[in-house]
Image: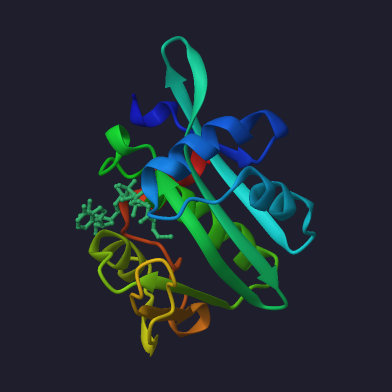
Length: 175
Ligand SMILES: CC(C)(COP(=O)(O)OP(=O)(O)OC[C@H]1O[C@@H](n2cnc3c(N)ncnc32)[C@H](O)[C@@H]1OP(=O)(O)O)[C@@H](O)C(=O)NCCC(=O)NCCS
């Protein structure tokens, strides 16, 4: 995949099958099609999808699911196709979500992440999120703790783009 080939846009009905494939390959307890459909019907919920040319057609390579509630972005899920990880796709997706929501007035980003999920924690830290608390045994499938991470976008360096200096932001203009 050529990095410049990535396009980022809102979820479309035809994306569901590929999102479910990525989800199944990414999480111990994948979401069911029904859960996804409920999510798409929920007016608070938004799904942002990254696509790239794969085998001569544009395929879903990653997605983010989040809720926009008042001035908060609550991130529920982010995943990238396994063979395309570590190329900046998640950064591009998050960069787009945060930039757009900030323009619409969002101030806080918050999420829960499995305590063992270091790649995701590193990703979130690179966007300024930090540890705020622990929910013991939050994940019922494994009994694992959830780390609560968040950032107040207004507390990031004055006048700076929240994502400046990050690979995702540098390449984010086409998103
Ligand atoms: C977490 C995930 C979304 C990251 O996607 P990605 O496209 O590979 O991430 P990026 O390439 O944009 O990486 C951005 C930063 O995240 C961190 N990171 C990503 N993968 C990492 C890894 N395997 N180990 C350590 N840090 C990692 C790094 O800080 C990286 O910056 P760098 O490349 O400059 O070091 C991906 O690993 C994934 O889909 N995991 C399975 C699903 C999941 O756990 N989702 C999060 C919970 S909701």
